[in-house]
Structures are given as structure tokens and as C-alpha cells.
Image (cartoon, rainbow, N blue to C red; front, side, top):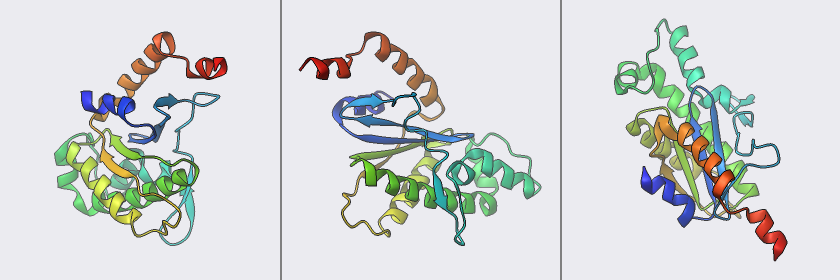
Length: 191
């Protein structure tokens, strides 16, 4: 877990995506967590992305675990915790297409984000087993390099290491940083 937290100190610009019941994320810009004016920067779930077939929907309607659970229920399966590996092994006919759809939607989200900010690293994390995170990262990277990347620099793709602990650690780190961290805006204003 420590190497994941150290990324904020060694890399300048990171796009962090977290797949949970919903999907969200965070931004590290110039080595600092960027929360934006309202504290919601990086909340990418409402971003509109294309669906297979040409229609559009929000990222959270394609890449969240809520959507996967809906698909399982529609297939007559009562979902168990997606944090368990057997959940993914037991229903590949339903989880496989969701993984493809989620990766395609994440690809579009990352591409849109890179048009605004030149991220060094994209981290994909979530309340899912580590091997599933790795599959999503690999599929997203493979889909990403097939896109028109003219004018963009390919970021490094990494699987997150925090998993379901990410939200609690992020909340604690945000609180500690607000209380004891360096206020970079005040520092820049003083210069």
C-alpha cells in the first residue's frame, strides 16, 4: 500500500479511477491532490461516453459494479460480493461482457481526460480482486492504443493497490492534508 501512496510524491500528474458500486476518481496535479472549487474534481461517473452501437450513456452506467449486479440479476443470478474471486470465475458469460464494456468506457474517459490534462499515469483501482483490476487495466490499455492518439502522449497504466480501502485512505489523507499539508495556493500567491 505504501508504494501507492508514495506515487503522489514521485509523480506530478495522476488520473485515478475507482470502480465501486458507482465509479469515481481523483486527480493529482503538480504533485498535489486537486479537489476543485466544490471538492468534486475527479468525480468522473457522470461523464458521457459512447456505448457499443452508437448511443451514449454516463460512465457510471457502463463501468460501475451496480451495472454488473443489474446484469447478473437480469440473468437470474443473485450477485455475491464482487470483491470475491469466485464471483468472477463462476459467471464469465456475464462478467466478461461487462469487463469489455467497462474497459471501453474507461478508455473514452481517459482519452477525454488527456485532452485536458497531460497525465503521466492512469491508475485504475476498485472494490474488485487484484487480478480483475489487472484485467481491466490490460483491456483498457489495449483499447486505448487503438484510438486516435494524435497530439497525445501515452500515459502509463497501472492497477491500483488499495482496493476497497482506497476511499477510507483517501478521506483520511484529504483531512490530514487539509489540516497539516502545505497550502500551495497560498504559497503561489506569496511568490
